[in-house]
Image (cartoon, rainbow, N blue to C red):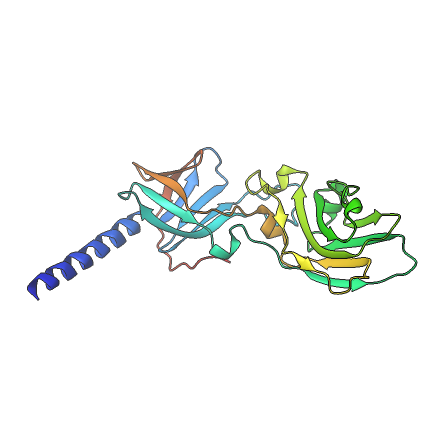
Length: 252
């Protein structure tokens, strides 16, 4: 019994020490190379913010670089950063309306997102659309372009095929809009067509918002805890500016 009590006390001491060391790291850090970048560490969460407000499009959500949870790792010389699980390698859900027009000699696909009507997006043709289709006509797959610049897509074929499954991949032609951080394609869930005769598809991707194209999703990435109140993440060194312990939560 006495031995169990000793182990229990050691366990409590270890947890208390880790919390103390974590609390030593809490605070606000500013990048030495980019003064607009702030690295905020609270009890359980981190947020990397870009406070610069002079981007090409003020309508885009550009302030949050990354956010999630953090923990001390590797003998407490590193902190591990991880975005919310649901945001890592996510596939976006779709809402699809199907129609049949007997006068059409093509398949029409319209892709709508919260980004589609932004002036900056339309003016610069920022979005590129790629389609993955499963159809009963193999020949049509060989005639589909790799990318489309517009969200109104027509696929012509002598024999209009029956579309069975659709998946949309959206990428970005301008890296500037995402600070070259999350410049990667966004993939939707595969949609199974209900009406095999349908030749018009209106595809809504409601979760593909301006914030989602500019946020970096981190999957267990390490930042180095340096001496003199500094943290190195990727090529950025952040210097601690003031203590500020917050009861934070994982940002959405």
